[in-house]
Length: 269
Ligand SMILES: C[S@@+](CC[C@H](N)C(=O)[O-])C[C@H]1O[C@@H](n2cnc3c(N)ncnc32)[C@H](O)[C@@H]1O
Image (tube, rainbow, N blue to C red):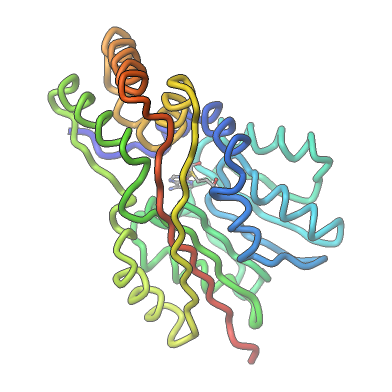
């Protein structure tokens, strides 16, 4: 049985993911930028950066005196990110294809270290958060965003039922579950940041995708893409047709997601 293949998933999903970010800037990018509160000249570390929407906008605020390092394991996500940066005239981001679990960062080097919908992909949550926290300068901040319990409901549940039927050995492994329990995430962060104040904002977002094609794009641009990787092209076509039919028949053109946005500021020493 295959483990969740985050690299393979987002290698395939990059184009759809970029469309989702363009269609729903208020779901990830805008709340993240509000938490980051970027200032001119900021040095920022973004892992994983995905299609770069947040880091490109952040660097427009930080201006030419700022600098960012943005990494992602998927070359196709990084390609999308580079295109966005170029279109926006943003030059001061180093985009690197790398496994965030293996990457090493300078200690106390960044004003902002950010990970949106990334911590749950780390091989070990505590090690990952500790590495991020170590990279934050005194007076700087760690900003994270993770998913709550209802990731793309109701279409995700309908999709997973249908995927399960088509892939006998499909293991419905959902890495984002590890950070869904905010009490657990908080406990790990408290240990890592050694008693710094942890600010948590819980948000619900409704994504009105409007058409069955839009709903399918939402599934295929997110982690749900993983469950089609092992399917035959025939099964993929079948599940796509069934999902679109279900959305039409049920007039279901929106999905709900909840998020936990967490910010921790490091004391100035
Ligand atoms: C849901 S996207 C989030 C991207 C971006 N932070 C955002 O909020 O739009 C998850 C990203 O994690 C990347 N990823 C997963 N595992 C990774 C790893 N071990 N190292 C680096 N990137 C990883 C995927 O390639 C994908 O681009």
